Length: 121
Image 1 (cartoon, helix red, strand yellow):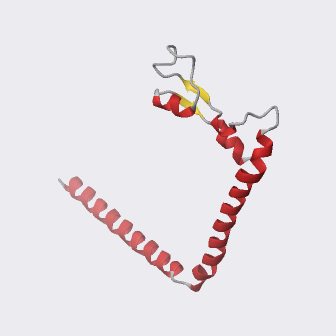
Image 2 (cartoon, rainbow, N blue to C red):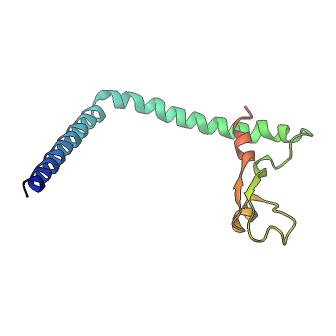
Image 3 (tube, rainbow, N blue to C red):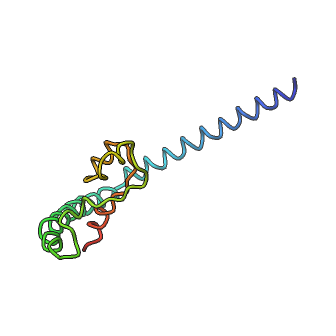
């Protein structure tokens, strides 16, 4: 049984080391979070968040409507999708008209239209 005791001692020692590392990591994080630098970063972060919302509204409300009128773009660009695996009702109908209809049928789809909208600018 000496080998079993050695293994137990090794496990206890490893557990103590992990516990010490976790405490040290937590203490370092607490020191960082309570420094003045975090307060200096918070206002620009909130401004960036607000700017992102303004740009998204601008693109979706002003830029995309004229682009959707171009003949090679469909009006419902965000509804573009590709069926990767058909659902059980795919053969009974004439395909899927919307991504929601495909998902409700259990099909696996890739909605590339919403990704295309993100790269329009």
